[in-house]
Image (cartoon, rainbow, N blue to C red; front, side, top):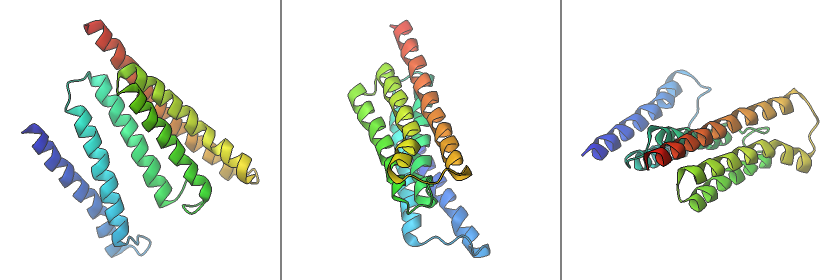
Length: 182
């Protein structure tokens, strides 16, 4: 029953969030979403929420659930930001495709870890490392002129890596909590 309530809340929250750009389009010509944009945003929001609900519905320490929330939010922001404006250049810059590798590292790490806290901590540390590597790999491949824009890309990637590290540390704490309880 609680899962059904949470699912209903998730659908309602997603609909509310999608109403924001819909209303903004009525008053601001700078906001110009197509139907496909709403569909993609809806799938991203619902999918992210569903992943969190599935994990949060299982009996786990609070730190584990928070770790999942941070990791899922970081993944959502990464995908959304790259689709909307791109982190390196604009959304059409092929260098932004490198961020798919960051998500692959996290996903494969989670599968290998079988969602166990200590393994998830290692997977998220690896994800953070992959995220930090992206702008440097992009600079090696595309050799951009070093400007303040490049510095901001490095700063942004460092902030995202911080989210992955925060999640990893929370998973580590959850693993220690589970070991103490056993």
